[in-house]
Length: 300
Image (cartoon, rainbow, N blue to C red):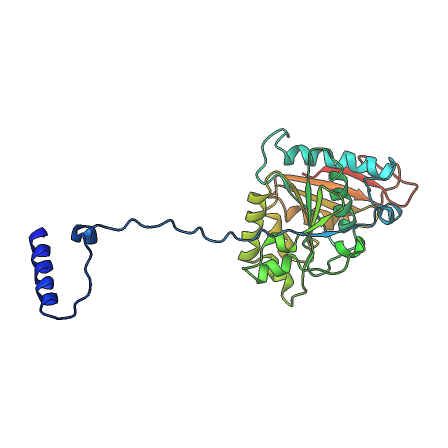
């Protein structure tokens, strides 16, 4: 190889002496053949982090409306939710009698409409948010009749349905951080003509798996459609580790409750909350005298 290069160099010099214009060659031919070390590669631009939008809740108005509020004095309703949430938190954090798959995913539902499930879902989330060691996300999954933002006095916002129809949307883009540090909200989102069908879609399955993986240390509460009104809520129930069934005292038919429980047999933990119970009515704990009462027990 070196002899060929030297011959080529001599030939070029002869041409140059003869008056033929030739391009300059590298003084050191060996250097021309040496590989050039690649320069440093510029790093790819970092993807901008998405910060969820902040909303402020009127805590005084929540207290007046009968909701648990972190800055309110101790009350009967707050004590009731302490009783209700304790076994749920223990199961969610793996401190129950046995490990529960997706124990941190809790669905609040009812047999039929008008049982007070959304009221209970919101109060349960607010109560858990007062805990020192737990954070909570409340998902408004009753997409046909969303009510969480309305009860909180907040305007409509993008949320769950937007994630299901747009695979490029990120969860952080639609989550709402609140002035209660340990509470975040996932609204039902932009109305869609096939909203209930989206709950049973593959996109919903993927989203729930993502939530369970990304927020494994957080309790996630789903306000679900009633069990006997849509089959989608039953599909949603298959992903849950725990289900709370709200029953309106002296109103809900026993047959409806039994049918509702039969649809969620596969769920490992089923808790029943007796809403609007008067003192002494029914089994378990009853409270009355101020418009709301609650009881609880584990469904079989």
